[in-house]
Structure formats: structure tokens, C-alpha cells
Image 1 (cartoon, protein in one colour):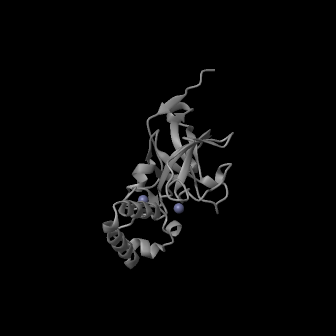
Image 2 (image 1 turned 180 degrees about the horizontal axis):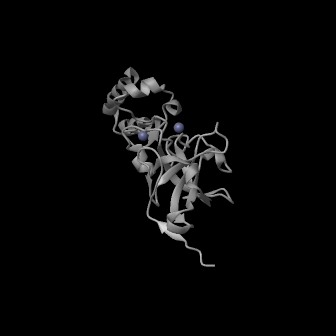
Image 3 (image 1 turned 90 degrees about the horizontal axis):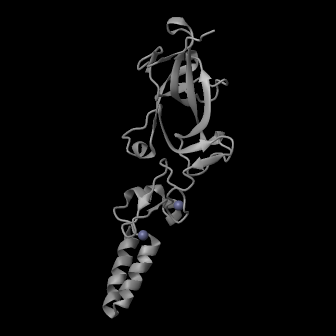
Length: 214
Ligand SMILES: [Zn+2]
Ligand SMILES: [Zn+2]
């Protein structure tokens, strides 16, 4: 028997902004209502019945860090999701509404992060627990990838970013800083001054005392 399979360009659910198209991200009811909703990307919207009835969403799941094999790590943001290789079919009544999964760059530039804003910088293979890319830039003395929830301060010497706690500073102190040079850059600068001879010594002291005042 021929199956009247038809792909739809959009499907409208209740609520404001209810038009869902392939490529959109959606929140889906978790079976356990005490858990946060699931997040998925809509790949296809299909009507299996006649005249656009029996609508099914073909989705690709986003995993939260705690759902991954390695679990949540310190550099994972609270709104971080991994685009998995796990596909599924869902009926429209499980969809709670739309959400927005930004790229990492877009997310860090958002002026305000709303409940429905998320970001994804990794693809995740659910069977092996591996990530693509498997290497990303690390920062600070602790050599950690950037967690956009955490405040970091940039060194004006080497341009690396640092966690206040890793350079023995409180968040409050870091927020007040107008200029910051990391320990390495201060030491490098001191060496440079010394190699320039006696004249450098007083300059070096000046640099150090300026830093201490902050
Ligand atoms: Zn650090
Ligand atoms: Zn530096």
C-alpha cells in the first residue's frame, strides 16, 4: 500500500511564536515533569496521514552535559548543549515551544540571556561519548576551556584570559580592575627592566607599586 508521506514546511503549535520550521530548536516535555524539558533540533516535519494529518517531527536531540557519558565538567556552561547523533520521532503534542540554540560566539555576545537561550559548541556521539571538535582553546593557568558563566579578566601583556580565583583575586576585586597584567607578564617585564641596567630598577619598582595599589 502506498504511504502518503508528505513533508511540511512548517507546523503551528499553540502559544506566541508557535510556527515551527525544520531547523528550529524546540523544548519537549520530559517524561519526568520535575526535570527540565528536553531540547531538540527539528530536522523534518512529516504528515503520514491524508491532507496533512498524523504529523510527526523528526528531531535530533541536544544533550545536556549531565546526560553525556563524561558528565558535567567545570567549563560547561549552565546553558550548554551538545548536538548529538541521536535522532528520534516525536508527536507535536510533546512540544512545549521554541527555543534558541546559539553558536558559542553568538551566545557570548547576547546582551541578555533569556530562559529559552542556549548554546552549542560541540557535537556529541552518544554511543562513544566523544566530542567534535575534540580540542578547543584553553585559557588561564588552569588551562580550561572558557565557561561563559564565569568572569574572566584579560592580561594586557599576553592577551590570555584568567579566572580571578586562579590569580588570587576575588570577583569583586576583578570587576574593579582597570588594568591587569598576569604573573608571567609582570615577571617578564621585571626581567626586561633588569637587563636594561640600573636605570631599569626604579622603573621596575614603579610598576610593582602601581600593581600593589590595586
Ligand atoms: Zn583558571
Ligand atoms: Zn600576561
